[in-house]
Amino acid sequence: MKRTSIFILIAGIAITIFCLIYFSPRVNAVDSDPMTVSPGGGMVAEWPIFIGILTTFVGAVFFYISLTEKKVK
Image 1 (cartoon, rainbow, N blue to C red):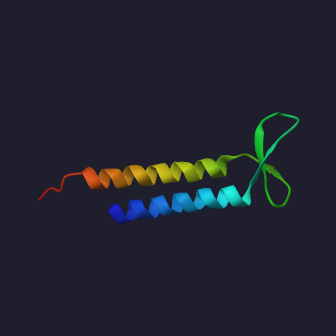
Image 2 (image 1 turned 90 degrees about the vertical axis):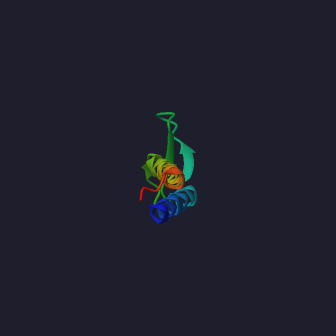
């Protein structure tokens, strides 16, 4: 479980960094909602950055649990 949690944690950090670089934040003047602009010019919601942060959090929680759980013999 410890190896899996480290993999999930690294994947979450990579997704977050990729989304910060790939999507540039921009305010939509019509809705006044924060949206992101893809490199193709289309407006998309900010869910990819949320997925990266959520994956990082889940990996950190799993890692903490794997460190604190007691081994049963």
